[in-house]
Amino acid sequence: MAIHKLKPMQVEKAKIKGMMNDGGGLYLNVRATGTKSWVFRYKRQNKTVDMGLGPYPTVTLKQARIESEKWRKVNNEGIDPKIERDRQRDEIKKAENEEILNFSACAEQFISDHKAEWTNKKHIQQWENTLKTYAYPVMGNTPVDKIDVSMVLNVIKPIWSTKNETATRVRQRIENILDWATVHGYRSSDNPARWRGHLDKLLPKPSKIKVVKHHAALPYQEIGGLITTLRAQASIRAKALEFTILTGVRTKEVIGAKWSEMDLENKVWTVPACRMKMKKEHRVPLSSGAVKVLEQLPVFVDTPYLFVGTRVKQHLSNMSMLTLLQRPEHESGLGYDSVTVHGFRSTFRDWAAEQTSFPREVCERALAHDVRSAVESAYQRGDLLEKRRELMDAWDLFVNSLPE
Image (cartoon, rainbow, N blue to C red; front, side):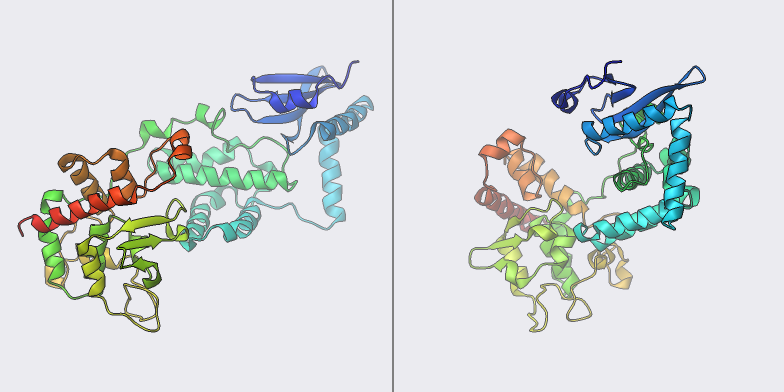
């Protein structure tokens, strides 16, 4: 019986879907998606049985050969390798006085391990809340090595068509947690939550059923009236909303803005990477209108923020501007109940596309979008600041030229 047919380079470069035979019952299973795993194939009662030995490259060729040799000897002794492996695992766990980790325990450990890289607390809460709502009731108490495709489908299928964005995120989170469990030795079989080449064969594509909901935006022809109303108010949140409209940035970037980020002499606001969605530093050219807003703001000694909330040391809340925008006029609001703060980015973009001749890339960069290809990014390192300054000055001029 020929064994050790495969070379390390063959394993590393394998891309064509199929089973590559190393001999002695050991195979490398290459999927259409490019992922690879080891399989030990043996016969019991004239039936072919496949036993997973782990993913490549987590399990190397050398390790896979050692494992297959071990289980080949077990099979030759008349013992079913799968049954024997389960028995050995149970004995080890009992000897170490360990319980088999269930899915919820693995999920909690995964979240704990990754909290350091998730700087947004809201992101951590979303992970915890979606898993508690959808995954835990179905598989929370299930040993992680017993979770299969049917369980995953029982979690996401009921909401796949009605809440597809949520269902997609839940699936991705389950997949990540099960991958974590595999790397830590709690699972050895394929990931049942994998999408490409797996669940995509069982569920309709999100693009076929997902209804895209855009943030409600105010037509740019009506922006002048809103700005006039805002300037008539002295509140900090009114100033924050005006500044948001004039700069085209996101709510999170505005409410967290600090005086140390402002260069009023050169009319530039530098937003640090940690507060940007794409985690890249973003320079914002300040128009004369935006600078005027800053000059009207009070400066507090005990806080670094521009737009200070009711608690002096803290910035405005995430909902402050939206509340002002949508609250009825008789309750000291603006009465734009169908418009969102984020929608003003669309208002600005529509104006730039329909009323100006500025290049698309300049307009997208103003919104901190990078539409360049990898090649373009390699050769064009600048951020088009001066061209964007012309664009934002034109936007400021347009806003102030509209009738009230």
